[in-house]
Amino acid sequence: MDNEFRQLPSVDKLISAERIRQLQENYPHALLVELIRQYLQQVRLSIAAGNPCPSVDEIVGAICAQVHTLENPSLRPVINATGVILHTNLGRAPLSKEAIAAMDAVANGYCNLEFDLDSGKRGSRTTHIEPILCQLT
Image 1 (cartoon, rainbow, N blue to C red):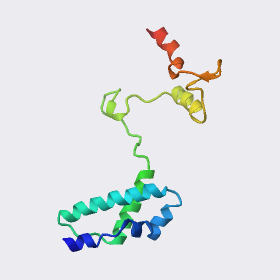
Image 2 (image 1 turned 90 degrees about the vertical axis):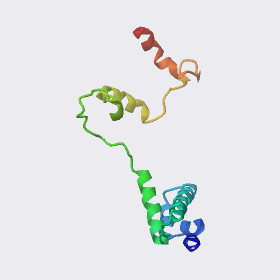
Image 3 (image 1 turned 180 degrees about the horizontal axis):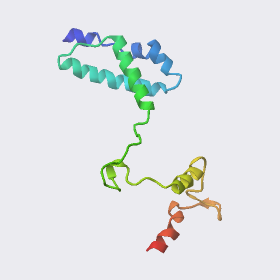
Image 4 (image 1 turned 180 degrees about the vertical axis):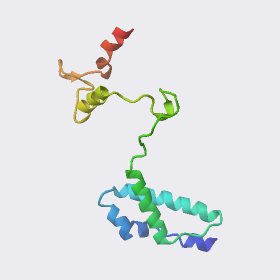
């Protein structure tokens, strides 16, 4: 088993591998180093459980796959065929087109979330909903 641990490549060797060096064009060095360290820890646990050490190429491939997994959103549209309209596990109720348009209008740039336009000073984010809540209650 000690021989398997000795076959583990160093973080420096992995960070200088060609495929990982190419990732550094689009991803922060610190992120890649952290992912390498985390994966090496997983491999150490696997070796301790009696499994062989993967090759450097397999380790590099697994780290590259992990990076690509991080860049893909995990949320996907699904069909709610449960019969439950406000389904917590499925994101509650879909937003209306009007609500999406209102969010889009302010989400594409800066907005006055905590800025009082009248005074020019810091405001409160609750002032935007306060009049509506007062009307409702």
